[in-house]
Length: 498
Image 1: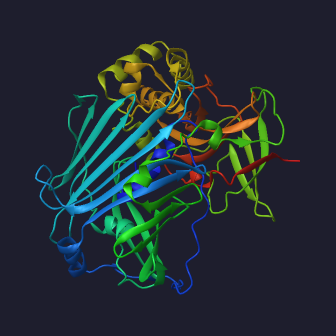
Image 2: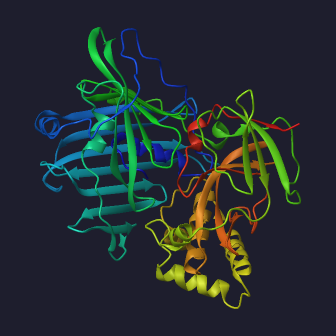
């Protein structure tokens, strides 16, 4: 989950297979609103004095309607305030969001809460970040505490605490929250800055670029007020998040056409919730493809993904056509060469991929015992996960060890366990998100699978479908948590290339 105040809720769209989203593009600025100028890099958009004034005077208690796939699928609540007695002393930003999902087994829900506390003196450094994910499958909590030279992570799954882990220190400050929740009108169009923000997927800082798009007066609820529009772009992503604020409160937040949060009163935000289903987020193909198991290549023409940078490799090429659609060819077989940095990252345990958990280590050893090489080890792990996990849509388990304990889940849970078992077996692995073709309905569905390093090449594998080498119906949008594929959901069209 990328942690940035309100933007924390964006990840909810990627928790389960089929739970990506769509929304109309953000509205154009009202007449009189400022227009953008060429970006001007500045050391900071906010001075220490301005941040201190916000800490002293600003309080926020805002509710939002959360829209996905043309549905009011959930809500979000954001607070900015002095820390409570039970929190580390400082200034706190808390974001809480809920999405309701439909599945064949009945209604499901996912709730996420992120509470970040910061020091009240420059540089307003992060003191503690507490994340809680609650669903009908259980509760997971992660607490990141800043120490003088590192972050300490304590993870708890359904009340069972894992040993504390030491992570690199973070340079995140309160600036990351102000620019995504309460940008003041003192900034000017064209200003741009870069700041550090802790990323719990990489368990390290990433760089975020914030650009002021416009500053100008708009009439809202019969009153003329200054409105600031800022775009933030996370390192490795291609589609920015757009935030419109007035009087220190975000009016709307959009992430591509895929997700929108709109300011609302609490009753409206929490009423008339519509459950989001896999069919709401799927993409119809113009004709059936049949069984793809024996095909070596598949070429498609994809529209509606302007601004999205697709990952490319020997197994996936992306060509922009004159009409702005994309000609994408997927090939079966080994992909890009595994770099030393990717190998190291692909072996590292994380809070999600807890590859050093004793149960994960023991099972990996049992599965691969006697295997001749990494190809056979990978195949054994993929098929074990396929054979031993009950298929259960929208389960929303948060760690690989939870998946192993429960032995059920959707594509996300299958991928969690495959990646963790591969890492425990000494095989670098990473997650992939995108679209997968299913011939029964002739549609592409949002899906998660994995890549394993075999003979120094990345090879796509799919534990949810029992494919030691994934078929060519897998269109990759995001790799290792990087990318913005889901932001285009609702605008995507797919046709078989002539």
